Image 1 (cartoon, helix red, strand yellow):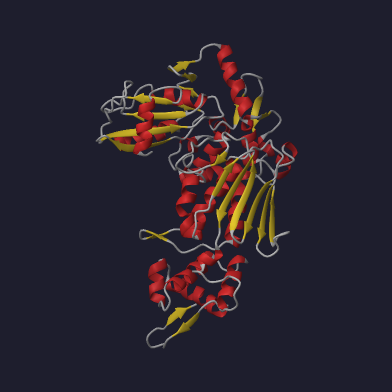
Image 2 (image 1 turned 120 degrees about the vertical axis):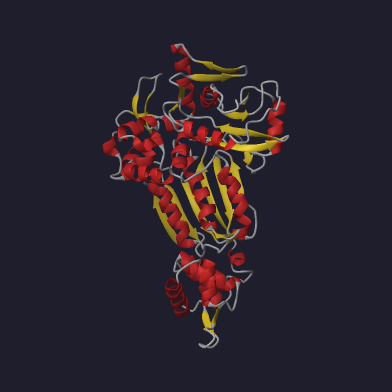
Length: 478
């Protein structure tokens, strides 16, 4: 949240999607989660702590700001406070010499309760739903907007792939060791996470489409959603057909792994330092686009999803239920979840982050990875994503079609003959010709034995050669 956005929200004032709350010296507002619940149930919105109803900026206690943020995150994961739970992110911002806390609350596909009460939102503020007619109308509205809430009364846990629920829960526990879901048995987990629910309008009860997509056996998913598939293609040489293909029809947890493996097989991981820390640009960029592809797809649409790696770009096409039309730019778009609950499960697993973060990260790191920022996130009935992949830039301006050692390097990379460590060693040598082994060890922070093994492979395969005398230790060049 930047100062310009805060200024715009305060100028706009409270309404259907904006709420100001004063924060007491040592505690959060007692009705904070009533507003969170109301926003989740209506159109989402922004909450600013430290601003009064009349737009006066009081701020929050700077000494308490960090603990307030942590409490907000923890309470959003507490089913006794908010049910079903919905992970929120709270951040501090300095404004007019005061500290404010901003909470963005997305719209949810579920009906949520706060302290076992249902709240909705109007331009005048939050209000509790007390009549059966009001509750029924809310459930009907949610069901018509979000297909992920579709209930399958004859879908049972026996229809889930063996071990996949345990796998998902282990990932959540590793990512969030203190997560309240970790203490629940499977039945409690399904209900608390909103994967098993009762539709108050129709009376149907059972597992949802989200549960089916996350955990279902291949044949179970195929029976309920026969059009579901993801076609992953490599089109470097044979652009009419493909050089490699992966036809993915499995649950989304395994589909995420399969797509990331396809990326690792066919795209290099350029060496990059952020500060003094080595990070994987490939992991950061393509983790975001893969997660975005899976969690924002409209799964009732029969349009097949494609994931195609070309020489100059990765292009994804996905069925969509658009919220707006046109190109999404990091500074201009408001994040809107197409499958809010599915997105939340991925967030709890650490496979996606705060809504909207993914697009911003791709823009942030794309130039370092490919040399340009000609990125496309185009929202229409078919959502199109294009992320540049400039092989020539990765190899410092050399022509990838030229003959010689460099051509062997590129072909080896594209065909997946280099693992990530070998690629990192190769990139270090390219970035610093005449580098010695001891410098590579320090740069990559790997054991000397590991480096010697990778050096031996790269030398034998013709990627690099050693020069200099044995007495001085020698050095390596492409």
